[in-house]
Length: 159
Image (cartoon, rainbow, N blue to C red; front, side, top):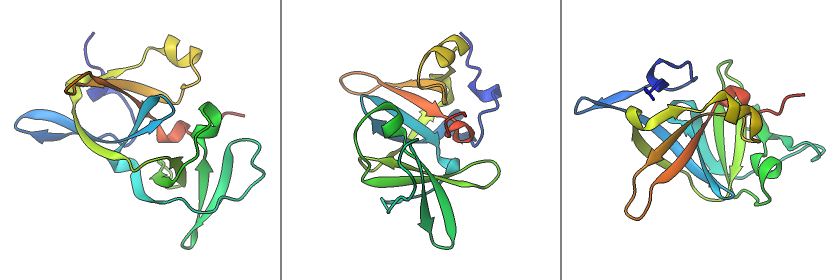
C-alpha cells in the first residue's frame, strides 16, 4: 500500500526533512492499552491537569486557561477508566482550544512519513476510535510501537 499520508488532508501535519528523509513530529501518549498521537503543530501546550467543570455525564467539560476557556475532551472516560494527571492542550483549525487529560507526560517523536498509513474507512467506522485517521508502526528495541494519530477537529463526540 502506498503511503497516502503525505497527500492526505490531515489537519496540522507538516513534515520536515532530516537528511532527505521526511519526518513528522508527533506528540505520543498512552491511553488505556493503546498509544495515541497528535501532530506537534496542533499541540498548544502540555500542562498539569486543572479543575474541569460541567455535568460529567458526556465526557466533555470546561476548564479555565488564562483568559480563555478550554473544552476538555475526556477520551479516557469515553474509552477507558484511567484518570489524567496532565493536560495536552490542542488547537483546532478554527483556533478553539481542547484539552485532553493524560496519565503521563507525552513524548515527542520524529516519525518517518513512510511509516504513517491512512486507516481504512471500514476500520474507522467499526471501531470506537473513529477519531483516528492514520496509524504508524515505530520500531523499538523489543517490539514495534503502534500509534493511532488523532484528528483534532474530530475530538468531540458526534451528537
